[in-house]
Each structure stands twice: as C-alpha cells, then as structure tokens.
Length: 216
Image (cartoon, rainbow, N blue to C red; front, side):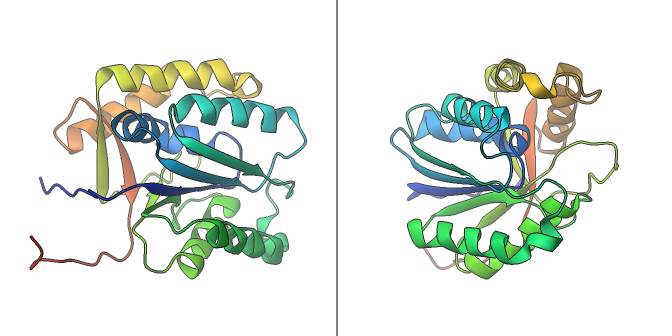
C-alpha cells in the first residue's frame, strides 16, 4: 500500500448536501483527524435542513464528531432533491465558504454519486477549491452506486464503533430508514478495511493529485 501524509494539515473544509452526509461518509475520518490534531480549524457547509430539527441534529453531531476542533457550521435552507434548480445559490454558498477558509484539505461528496444533490455539489468543489487536495466520501444507499475508491483512511475498531454509536445517538430522524443501521455502516467499513489491509476504513474518491517526488 502507498501511504500519504499531510504534515501541515491545520484547516479543513467540509461540504455536504444534507445533514448527516458528513457523519455517514467521513465520521470516522473526522474522529481520527481531531483526535490526532487538537485545535484543528474546521468550517462545515451543509446546503439543506436549515431551520428544522435536522439542523439541530447536525450541529450536535458535528460537535461530537469533531472533538477539540475549532468548528464552525453553516446549514442552509436549499430544498432537498432540487440542487440543479438551485445551482446559483449552491455555487454562491460554496464560494462564500472558500472566502472564509484556505483549507489544507477538502472533504465533500464524490462526483459519481447517484443522488443529484451530492453529485451537483461535488462538481462545484473543484471550481472553488482549485489547489487543495479533495476527498469525495461515499454514502451507502439503494442506488447501488458504490464504486472503486482511490483513497482510504484506516479506522481503529474503537473509532469505527464510536462512529456508529454517534450516528445512532444524533440522528433520531433517520433511524426509521432501512439502510440506517449498525450492520450497514460497520459492514461497509469492514469491506473498505479489507481493501486497504486494515480492520476498518472509510474510502474516498479523489481527482487530481500533485506529486512532489523531489521533496524531503
């Protein structure tokens, strides 16, 4: 396996179309990052759910998934499932986030996601964040759109279990969904762990990658 590190990582931008996307797709990675890097600056943007119980869930959940971080969360009121019709508002929101932070890492949805909101937001990320490494998380759902990711963050068993526990604790509005359960989340993490020679992992899709093979 090829390992990559970001030794100077101090600022992270998080993007999601819906409340719970970040926790499902990258919750274990956030726990791992914040445990290893106390005081990390994190700016999160969620496009929908503002002014509802979903926003309350999201703010409490991200605080739990980012312990010790300097966290700022913005939850907007775009309509769920209608991002193509709200393209300008979404683009302005992403550009506004970019004006607030010069991140060392961007985490958001991946461009081959079957959900139009996820896919649309993923296409906006490289237009605003041009020089930063970006990781596109995956979300298991009925569409069957899980592909072949190119980047992995191994998770300790403790982190994997904590992710599942926090998902169940903080998103009561989603517990009725047939795919929202411990088996689904740990099952995917176990598969991704096998693929990167770990017990558990979260997987991501990446676009461009700039190398520095002459660096020390």
